[in-house]
Length: 204
Image (cartoon, rainbow, N blue to C red; front, side, top):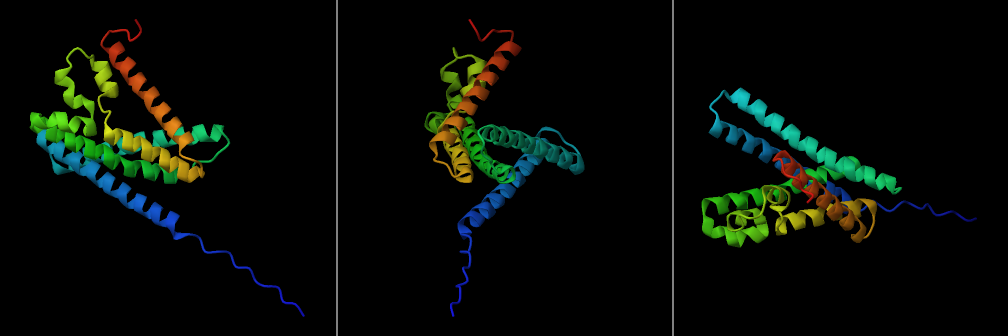
């Protein structure tokens, strides 16, 4: 008499679940930091009731979350056109967590503004806009679009691509090309929008 062996499925690897929990934790920290900074800045620039400041900070957080949601949606729709599914909610949480990189860049930029001697050292990391005074011939549109370029921006692009590659189970090369192309397109759009707003044509 033969007994068929019961094949039990292998337990799911805890690594993806651990990564998602870590991303959710970092995203929560990012949201709290956004809220606190908005509340603090509101209190510094305008004296008002704490309730009003809290409401303003909450609205700012919602606007930041909305921008991240639109970014995640754009990537998800792109990959859908390629016949692949990018898990929207998980990717959105990852993007919100990555906003801590943006906050670090803003913090370093604040240090450079408080001590001009630090600007040449921090510019390659936090963004070339810290050297704006040294290149007055460069227009505001270019600075608005590409002034934030630095090692932290590049690392954020790389991590955004990595999140996509992991979720799609693809090599990094394709998502990295998509991420860089999307960044360049949005930067050029910002450049042109600023110049057009100032009454200048970006096309000579």
